[in-house]
Length: 107
Image (cartoon, rainbow, N blue to C red):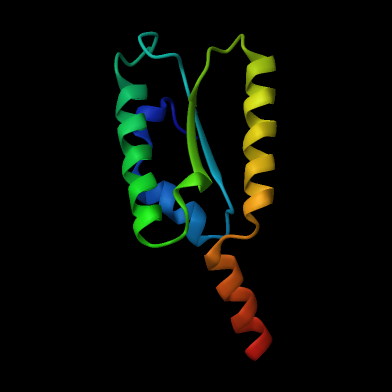
């Protein structure tokens, strides 16, 4: 648990994929409305770096997304979550999970 998305680190995001996540959503407060001043802007920069890493290692940058919402935007959260889950389902299992499945079949 983090007090602010500004505390999220690229390693944490990449670890989620290593541990088996097919997609990762980061939800931060609205830009300009961060209790920690610019934590959500730092988080966005980190998510963008992970986006580029996923692109370079052929996992797919579309498997990570960041949204900025206020606590009172539950319907937006639900819509963004549904949209992202639908996208990840269309993409299928991450290449990491596919490789693990192939490895398990060979063993």
